[in-house]
Length: 184
Length: 201
Image 1 (cartoon, rainbow over the protein chains, first blue to last red):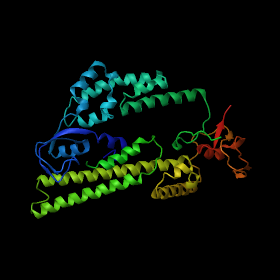
Image 2 (cartoon, each protein chain N blue to C red):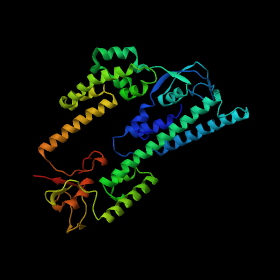
Image 3 (tube, one colour):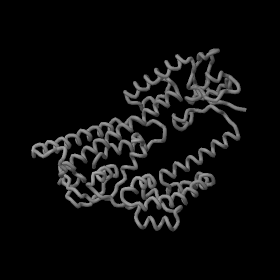
Image 4 (cartoon, each protein chain N blue to C red):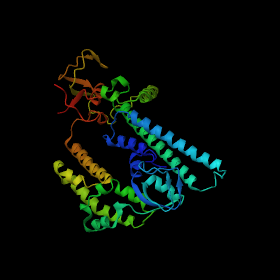
């Protein structure tokens, strides 16, 4: 596994997907509130992606597209991709989509490419123009991947400005966190 | 829920600011380990049940097999979460050694508190390895990569650092708000720790 230690990768795989069991399963309690520890054949459940994926490989379940890739979202993205609040639907919309596409619905791929193409332009544009105070409303719509791009664009602009204006080379190590006000 | 604790642990790590250390979450960490044990006992119970029913554990694909499989996968998932947590913290700790200081006591106290015991040992050993490597090469590797235009820089002291601090070419009285003209290599470590700032122009 290439990104075994990747924090984001672990978080993506915790997203829930709806699935149908083709096999009965014993000794497993999916919900703490339910007494019986048995899953009957044909029952419909929502499980995290990492588990669903492994079970899918063994042909024990079939996966269907989760709510964040439903028809409603698709229509909204077609209407105006840049204005859709993807963050509330799925924090890792693109990564999750990439992992999911080969398992249940190949058309997710086109959806992702289309949405990203339009939204990327918007993100890049806003990163250079929007004032910090006005950005929070816009930032709350972005997925984690888009937020990373936004921050990258801003930090590259800052480095450019610093290079042009000059300034002290040595700084407090960023790893120590933000500078606290020196107590007087 | 299956392997839920591991996810909570990783989430706890991700909620902090990027690249900065948080307190080692001993409690949650132990809960994940407990959950692993729980999954393991249930896995064992299912396998034993299959053996008692004298079915072939390797070949049969019955309800018990899939139950055991889910417990097995949950174990692996929790393991991955634990490993990722420790690994990513170790990376930050190595960065601290490179960027701030090679001695544990040189680090600010609020950072030291965040280490677990084994992380303190790790930090010490990593620093020792770095130091011996740098001694072999006879070169200081954790200084600024860009060659300076002037070996001396002007600095202002931000914290009271005491009198008679030994620098490479003199001893200085580094009182707060005082300004000094120091050798860049001497000043670098203090600037990195936020005790001084560089003045330009």
